[in-house]
Image (cartoon, rainbow over all chains, first blue to last red; front, side, top):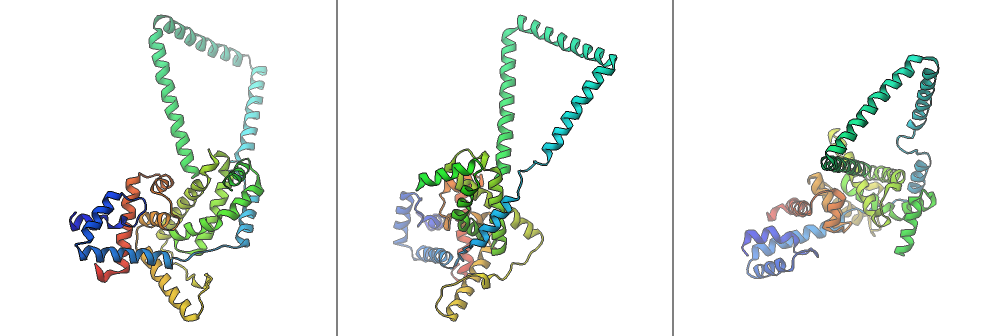
Length: 162
Length: 181
């Protein structure tokens, strides 16, 4: 091991997780190199200084009481949206019922939408009859994409929480 | 003991407030010191710790396993500390003189002054590190997390953790003992 390699590995000399082979090579080099030995001592001194003089804080009962007080008055994120969404859904349903009752054209509109959906279903049935393998592959690809999207959303939300 | 703690965390995960209060008592000093290590200011550290516990309480139901609780809590604390530190840097906030707030068991006033001077020197040296270097150094040297755990907490590869610790140690050594460089 040369000095350059040794200097770049000295930081992990006292690390319990470091590679034993690297430590053995450093030891061999340190036995013949005083410059690297001095560098190691300087690194160790800095590490000792860090551990000796880093202030250690202790918080008292008041901290816990203040924290619990904050927790007691906290509400989950987005909780204020729930009543708004609830009222919105109820109003939409009422609106729909009124439209169906008072407006005959609205009913015919629903029939038209139903016709369109039925046509799509029939087309889908034709595709299934004529190309089942293609349909299956398409389904698998779509499911995989959906799975990836859901996993990504979960990861993002977990990261956001943390 | 570990089983008892795991049971308490599981109770807290169901929204049990006394169980969560027990967790606050248990981890308050750890979290405050992690936040202090990153921030370098005791008042900010306490604010961050409170915010950490609040955030944890509101989302503990989504925690997958009781065993991952402490790591998850540290992750919240570190992320909040980094965000606050960045915001403080943008606002050019001046650090408070906090030594009066620290309790010391040193026997004489001279020793106390000496200790405060050395602590000031150390915190100034830590301020010279980048935020990334400082965070990994605190987690490794004071909280004694493994590289794997730090990688999970910060969501970075282990190689990056090792390289940041290495550069942080060399930088700190340069600052604390420049005459030897």
